[in-house]
Length: 326
Ligand SMILES: NC(=O)c1ccc[n+]([C@@H]2O[C@H](COP(=O)([O-])OP(=O)(O)OC[C@H]3O[C@@H](n4cnc5c(N)ncnc54)[C@H](OP(=O)(O)O)[C@@H]3O)[C@@H](O)[C@H]2O)c1
Image: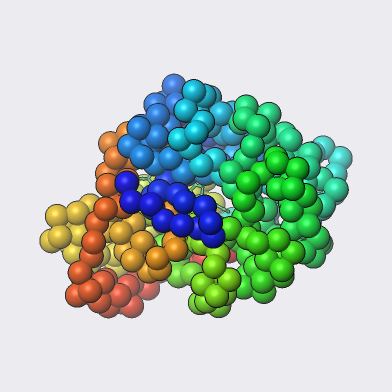
């Protein structure tokens, strides 16, 4: 598996996003299937594993990851996040999102940061987090203050590298002035461009980008025709029955191009992303070992400049119905 460097942290170009492995995200999943998926990801070289204290209830996702890395901790870059799983009785602020439920609640106050990290370390059953992100900026707390508390975790050895998720260029710059940021994790895929200012700032500061939902929550695989019960995408306007059908129709040229190249649409979407910047990596999620192997194989693909130009042209004509989520 090809590797890339985020700040000064080396990771596989394609890792594994574990969010899909907790119930209530993409529908049914049990721990046996989740553990098999994690093992498949690690065995195939997807050893940058991304989780959060907010995935699943009561640290479920982190505990799954903790079990999967037992006995092979040194092979794995463990990344997790804080700020959305708020202790009972603590206040929170609204972070508006485009899902039907309208907002997330965030608390990234400095006084809570160490407690968040200690809880994640217990869930992960490890003594250090390789990459620790503020999951969302807290609208009630200057990001420098959150970053200051995160820097203390590095100083005290609980955390190796700092990350920020869902931030703007200005927020990245402000936090980076407090302590070097290794990676920014924002949504970026064929149907969700990254903010140009953020990308330019990350390049200038030497901060890597981790692209979340690189398969557009599964849409870009070309396989989503309808949603099952308990699937959180029912909250996402791009996946309403009407929008999904139209979006699938308009995505047809990319699916055809993938077939022409002998790739799956998922592989083309991931390889395209890796060609956007030398310091971007990605973390697709899947419950299915065959999908995981297919996705990880995309790390070694080289796309011809003509192919990239054809993709860009097709994407210019791909008008997405259903707004954006952030
Ligand atoms: N920082 C943030 O705020 C944030 C937000 C969202 C996500 N993330 C991170 O990004 C990671 C990935 O995002 P995501 O899981 O939302 O979306 P994604 O990786 O874009 O898509 C996952 C979906 O794609 C399907 N899939 C994957 N590979 C496939 C293949 N080869 N063929 C067909 N279907 C395939 C999966 O279904 P199967 O299980 O059936 O394969 C699943 O439904 C998360 O795990 C999380 O770590 C971060």
